[in-house]
Image (cartoon, rainbow, N blue to C red; front, side, top):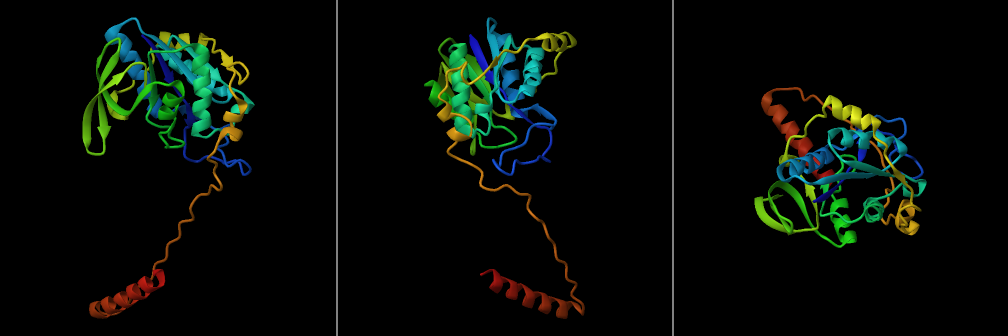
Length: 264
């Protein structure tokens, strides 16, 4: 079985700077980590290989050159190969443009039996890339997978998290699945794995290398764009009400009624 895991580099903190022109996150100079949900995706690929053997695990990401470090982490954990999509043409992508880029990269690598993504990225929280990627690859998909119970050459038997609990579903392969944090506990790399990751050569593909339509990637390929990003200004006002309890209650009621009338 060939498994491709899609991973993303995200800021290690919520204190990020925004580009005032593009309204996208400025990633240069910001400490970054492997998207936590993608760590669960990577761990599940490793567990599938341990349970069933014979699995080739490839990781792929789109981002700036420093994302090589994140991909080296996946090699340290046990991925066989890792590839980076990096080009100015990819910059400023929304979820649709990101999915187009990833699909082009995957087509360059060749089809897989299973594609695993984290439920969402912590810097966007949209949970859209996985299903979009499945549509572009022309395969089935299932989201919020909390457990893979059985695997065969043709299908997965999974437990899926829903608003009302869990449901058991069968997913025909090839397929894209997105996994929730309930699925496993990610491991740490071994010392030998870390050394292997540091020594790994991470091939970089440009937009031309993957033959993607440049009108479908980056800002030009993003139908959704952020108009304005700002940190909410939290203000508080405290007013003391003096007097006896009955007087305080009457004055408080009067103020609440007046405030309600203003809000209306």
